Length: 80
Image (tube, rainbow, N blue to C red; front, top):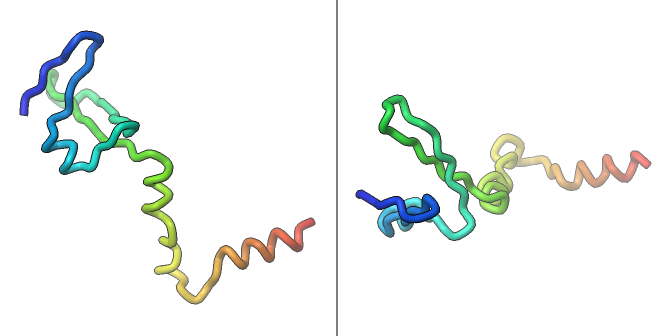
């Protein structure tokens, strides 16, 4: 897919790419030079909310019998 750089260095991301990667307004793109002089690598940087959704509950698979939140609350209540 080919896009054109407009005034103020703006580009339009092709709709097929937007749908495929779920890019939404507010998402950040990390642009890095590639190995070749005419190559650019673009990485989608997820917002904090998306990152939180991805890791939410991730620790349960390592220790399903523990309630980490209850342990943290109990620990904090004895601290002070």
